[in-house]
Amino acid sequence: MNDVTRIFISYHRSDGEADAGRLADTLRRTLGDERVFTDVTNIEFGANWERVVDHTLQDAVAVLLVIGPAWSLTEPIKYELGLALDAGVAIIPVLMRGANWATVTGDLPSDFDHSRNSMPSHWITAVGQAMSSV
Image 1 (tube, rainbow, N blue to C red):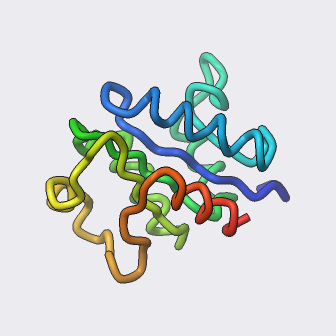
Image 2 (cartoon, rainbow, N blue to C red):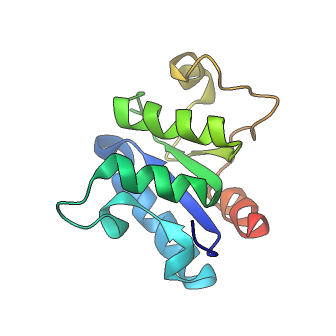
Image 3 (cartoon, rainbow, N blue to C red):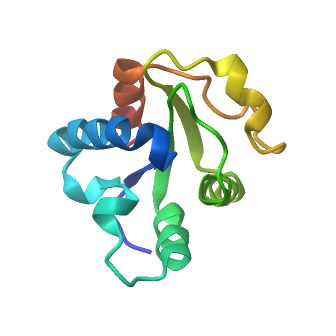
């Protein structure tokens, strides 16, 4: 583990990659590059994805779960959320482009405890929550 507190951004590649990128760019301008993790920026070609994600989530203070209107739970997202839940990392759902929280809650892992994790927020709220976590 390292001494850099990180915000981990999780997203569905076909639905939220652009949104996740914009959110990451906004946070990086405020917090610095080393404090914001996205797979496309922080995992080098050929690196073991699971090992990098495992290590990064151990140092994370929050996972921003970017949810667009066509979001669905994929195996990589399920893996990331499972690690975050096991590590006690806060999960902050971020609704983008009119996404509806009611349509995605059934897809979330059964151990996702809404009372323990943040309720969904929108862009500005999520940025504020992420910055206050660091």
